[in-house]
Image (cartoon, rainbow, N blue to C red; front, top):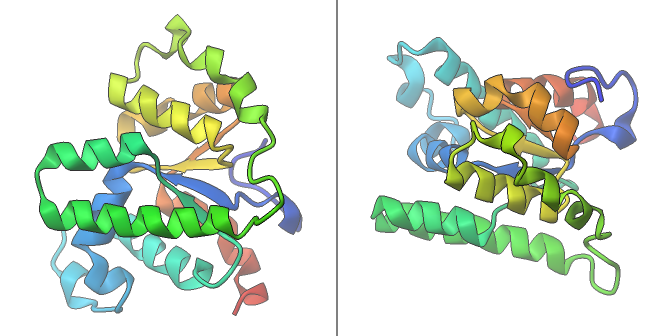
Length: 191
């Protein structure tokens, strides 16, 4: 799949997105801007890429909540957050996990998962993924099992290997600003 071009193919947009733990942390740390549009929190930041990603997260979540987007977490996500030892961060992660579980509940009698993700699981243990840490492998394992369309991250090492990951695991890897660039042409459909 061509990562950054969807043309007018609304149905092929990535809707089920796995959130890397670094995204969870940014959502909590910069929530005053992302959720409440408090621009002061990012005004003095020097890291342009980080600011670009934070602004994109604001745009993504402004657009996506109340629409058909699903943001996924897993037990491995919670364990990564728990390891940080920050109770408020952990509570935030549980709140996002609760949102994810409500997305799954919306399927009611329909299948939330087709089983296609399980067919790809063997690939994550191949030697060609040794550049991923044990924790990153676990998160990609979960993202594949949960049949996510994309993996949202700000981890540069993971992002730099996105072409390989996408070709092997059939899941796209985006930084927030890239995902927003995909959604932006369709934003008027949701507002």
